[in-house]
Length: 186
Image (cartoon, rainbow, N blue to C red; front, side, top):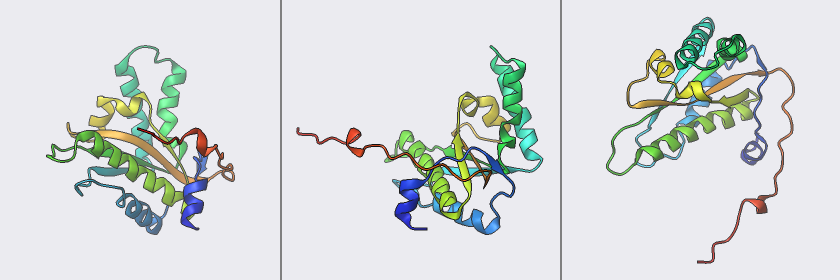
C-alpha cells in the first residue's frame, strides 16, 4: 500500500474479530511506533499487549476503577467497562513514560507517545488490520494505571484495539483542507 494512500484514507474500525495481528505484523506495528518524532531521542513511551484471558482481567480492572470513581456506576456502565477489552483480539495500552529532561518538556513527551500510537494505527491500516484508538475517563484513572503496572511517572495515552475488520472499513471523509489552514500575515 502506498504511503499517501495510508495517510489519506486510514479510518477507525471499531468492529473487530479474530484473528489479531500475528508476530510478524506486530513487529511491523511496533517498529512503526518507534519512528515517531522524538525530540531528544528519549523514546518516552512503552506498550503493553493485552490478549486472551488477560482481556477479561483488564475488564475487571476497569470495573473496579469505575466503582472506585463512584457516581453513576449502573449495571450498563459496569458491563460496558467489563466488556470493553473484549472488543478486539488485541488491546495495546500506549503509555507515556515521562522523564525530567533539560530540553524536552513532558507535554512534548506525551505528544511523542501519541505519535507512536498513531504510527501503530497507520501501519495496521497498511497491513489490512482494523484498529481504533479509545481513551475516556478510565484511561486517566490512577487505579487503572496502577493495576496495569504503570509507575508514578507514567500515564496512559490510550488503548488501541486491533484485529480483523468485521466489515469492510468505511470510506474516509474528505474534509475541505482550506477550512483548517490559513496564512498568518504577521
